[in-house]
Each structure stands twice: as structure tokens, then as C-alpha cells.
Length: 319
Image (cartoon, rainbow, N blue to C red; front, side):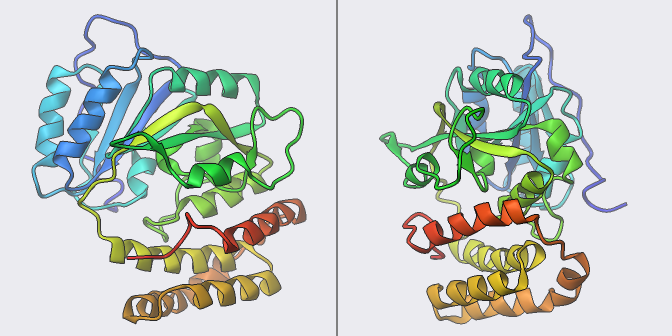
């Protein structure tokens, strides 16, 4: 039994005195961010949708797990999972095992959904059965300024079929997206190999290859108060490695070569980037074994995004 299976999960907190949302469950992953995750849980508890919440504590050592457990005893509808290790994005996979609603809203420990957004997402997914994921608008706190990535989502260059409720996307942001649970499970969830850092790109490619659409919706809002407890250097290294792996796992060889060259030309030339490339090369044997190129229609969409990302100010490897 691996660490992902050793969940040591608790039961749901007290049911309290009201009905729960039967459409959307919120999943939160956290690691050593006690104050941030408690704030997020308080915000979620105040939502009119009254969603159940599953929290995966990814091996925190600062008392986060104990604090969430105390919170769950007093706040109804919260379930805490403690796998005993830092699973990264796999903590979301673990949490989704306990989701009984048709949709799951991912939420980071330093983000929270605005009232009404989850209900809107459920209505959109109900009405559009070919859509697997709806990503909301992100505003940065304090101040409420729009995250620079939102402009790219809003102005996506991908063709938009008339039936879609919003601009078509080629990937999504996990902390600001509501997904169809069946589609997430069928695609295998987040990759065990990638751990964390741009892990959405591979799952998004697999969802599109399976015939699903990903969309942006202007009417959904997520608030993001960036935590000061961030390992920017580590995230850069993981992001470079994961982008290279995803590229070679799903893109045609010629495209992968060009994308690799552009990526390496644009990252900082230092030991962190060099280490990330070496780690990516070390994974070459399994990448070759598991390589599965996306269908031509999906590749056409991804190429449109490649051109946009070259000039992106919101997608840079820094730290």
C-alpha cells in the first residue's frame, strides 16, 4: 500500500442543521499553512451553496492537520484526510475518492470561492454535457485586482463552438476550476509522476483527447490571497520539469522539439533550471514508455496556445 492509499481519513464533521449541496463538493489540499487553510474553510463555510469540503493535509508539520481536525468538529460537512506524506496534486485524487456529488470544485489553501460561483458552475455543467471543466475569474487579495492570467483565459485563441457557454481553453487552473467528477476519474486524475507544478496541463490534454471541452466563465470568481509560505525556486524547478515531460508525453516529436527549444531559451540560466532539465532527462525511459500523442484536432488547439504563450506575461518561470 502506497502513501496515497494510507489516507487515515476521518468521518464528515457534524451534519449540523441544514441540507448540503448535492451538486458540488469542494476539495482543498494544504501543507504547512495552518492560518491560510483555516481562513479558507471559514470562507467556504459561509457560502450559500453549503458545499461539503474534503481537506487533504499533505504531511504538514506545523499543526495544520490538528487545527483542521478541531475546525471539523465545530464546522459541519468537513472531512479531513491525513495521508502522512506530501502527495502534492495527488492529494486531490485522494480527496475525490470521497466525493459523492457529480462535480468537484478544487480550491487551494490560499483561495476561496465567491458566493454563488459554485451554483453557477453546477448549472453550466448541467446544461452543457460536453464540458468537463469550468474555470472562473481570479482576483488577487488584498485589493481585488484581476490576476493577469484572466485576460489570457478571457481572450483564448481557441475556436469556440456555439454550444459552449464561454471561451474554450486548452488547460485550467486547479485552484479556480469546477470539474465533472466522472470525467476527472476516467482520465485518471492528476499524474503521479508530475506531483505538483503545472500538473493541470497533462490532465487537460487527456480530457480534450477524450472529447471533453474546457471553458472559462466570467461569472464565476475565485479570490486568491497568495501565501508567503511559498518555495518559488522549487516550484520553478518542478514547473520546468513537468512542462518538458508533458510536452514529450503528448505532443508530436517535431512540435515537442520546438517547444523544448523555446522553453530552454526562456528560462533563467542557473543551477535551478539546469537541475530541472537533468531531472526531466532522468525520466526519459518512462516518458517513452507512456508517450501517447493527442489526436490531430487537439494538437491544432494546443498549437494555437503555444503561439500565445510565447508572449505571455503571466506564464514565466521565475523564483
